[in-house]
Length: 378
Image (cartoon, rainbow, N blue to C red; front, side):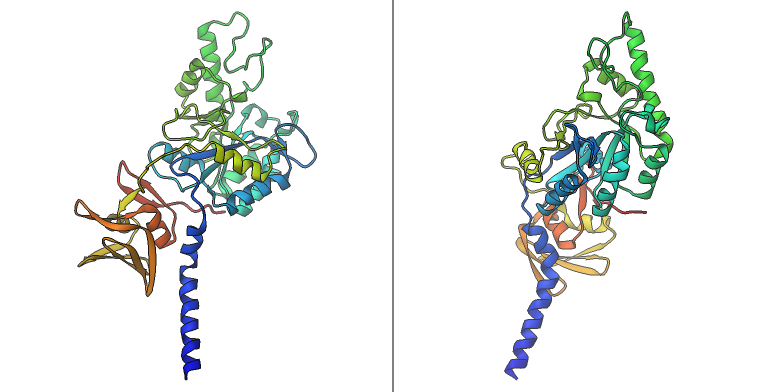
């Protein structure tokens, strides 16, 4: 009889462990930074071509796999835009960007991104779309670009100018330099027309807004930035190697180079770590637990010193003034206590995400909580 009881207890403990494993797995990942984004920059992925901006498919995949294993969370361009507008992003957030629209993105990078469900955006030189094989490095065709953006919800495109990705005779980038005897009006018209052409040529290749751009060579001037903004660009990326924060100018977003052959996975990790913006004394972000449950399609009911939440088939109970909750029959230890503040029962956003096993996006300005869109192939 005692042996049978022992087996029953053991099986119960195993069941509880399995129930809490997803939560504990998330907890075991280190939080290196919050409320900032490491925007990574790549160009060409190829196993034979060599240059300072070309890496092999193996290295590219190793970089991504290493970052995943270390607890980095990859976000989409749309999530980055939401972040710049005030919404939250996951801890250790990373945005993958590519410049130039090379065909290698479709043939080498895209299969890896798709298999790992990692979002990315490619900034395309649209003048090359007319003759993809005519450029020095083959470019993507319209069909290839359209296939990626419409087959997934996590591959995006943006502008890298239409025909201004070159240097003028005086060595200046065409976006910022002046042609011989070019007037101010002629320069402004040239940049405006080119930016509008870039957006126009991409318009039929995606259903997403086309308001993002990467500066050729990472070079811009106040005049050039003002002109692309007039043409409809709201987010523009440089090559300044820093973390992107909400306080940054959305038309001067920094990026960290990841696309050189000497950047090993560990070196990339250290490169990100060195650039983390210190945020001393920042308090955990808290949300109204009842409002969050309702916004996520569930319900909430308060009884005594506890708040009961129901989301789908799952039921949770939060103990007010305690760092604990129940999930079904299992007790869960929270990082932060559940509090009653100004008549509302609040919970740390990280605890709520871990409790329900769902990444969330929270916009403090509106008080809205929403489920983060899961990368998927349509």
